[in-house]
Image (cartoon, rainbow, N blue to C red; front, top):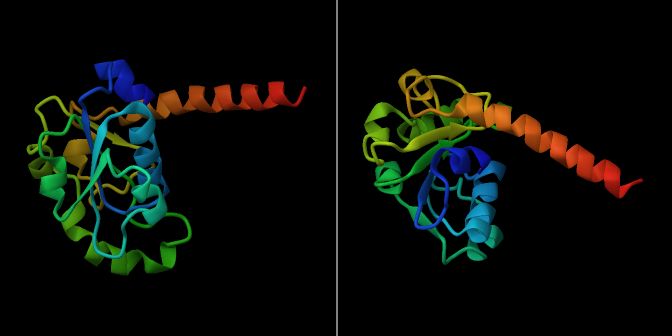
Length: 165
């Protein structure tokens, strides 16, 4: 969220798109949409939707889309995560088949706004959830996002230490 704010400012009237596994990161975007007020469009393969309880709590800011292109259309931000998160490694080959049409590539990014930002929490699997041309492209802010994560972790550590003093 910090990276988007640095690049674009306000979250008001903005649309974010999540394409891929409805994992913990997707759930975090759902929670952020409730707090910050942006619209979130999500496209996942059947059976990989985000947590239904979290999804239900954000029904006014979140839309599930049946196709990645529909989710990305006119978005200000496009994001994803690896298709096989920690604990899902044994299912990686099956997921590669099921998620094949959910790769963030230039064709998909072309459906978003021209200046849409691409984010990924890293590490990424190039050629799987994101193409090299997107992650290395001019609209990719993944390194700025990783840099911002350092400051977020430092702030959390400081908060936790102060609470225990």
